[in-house]
Image 1 (cartoon, rainbow, N blue to C red):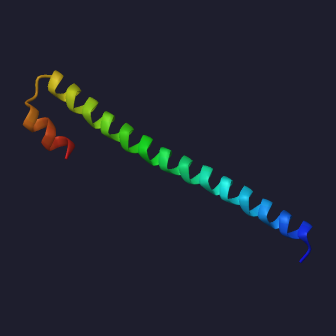
Image 2 (image 1 turned 135 degrees about the horizontal axis):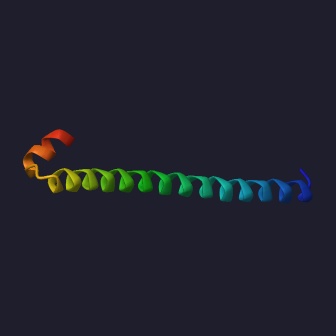
Length: 64
């Protein structure tokens, strides 16, 4: 292999690692955001149920 070809291959490998890292980070952030959003919506539903005058244990049993 020529030196020029080795340089191109190593540049391609570097760019591939960078793109793969960005995609992995985006995927992890998306999962964390989804988990946080689901937790918040569960808490909001629980608060709404309790706010309507139902007992906390009854509301929790409905949501579980």
